[in-house]
Image 1 (cartoon, rainbow, N blue to C red):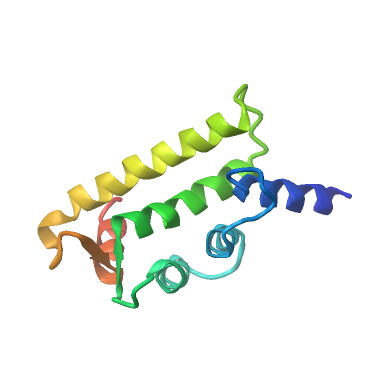
Image 2 (image 1 turned 180 degrees about the horizontal axis):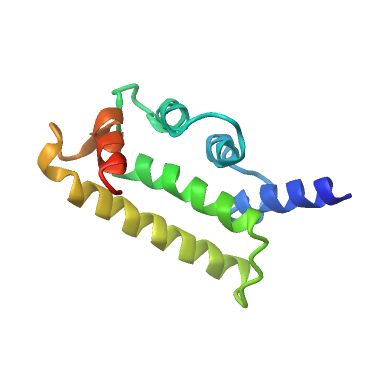
Length: 131
C-alpha cells in the first residue's frame, strides 16, 4: 500500500492541470533523482529528453522544463504538506524553475557560444563551479 500511495502521489504531482495526463519526459527526468547514476548521466538524459531540436543545447524553456521536473519530484518525495492548494504549489514550482533558469543563463552568459541556448558542457561547467 505504501508504494502504491507514494507512486500515485508522485504521478499526480506531475499532473499539472489535474486532467489525468503527465508529460512523460518530465516524469522520467524527475524519477532520475531516485535512480542510480552520477550527475553527468542524469544531465545527459535531460539533454536527450528536453532537447526538442537535437541541437545539443537547451533553450530557456527546455531548461525550465528540466529544472521543474526535479523540483516537482523533490516536492512529491518530501510529502510536503504546505498549506497551499495544488494549483498554488504548481505556480510556486514554476516560478522557482523560471528563477533558476534565468540565473543559470545569466551566470553562464560569458562562457556560452550562443546566448539563447546552453550546451551540456556549459551547463556542466556552471554546475561544477558552484551552481
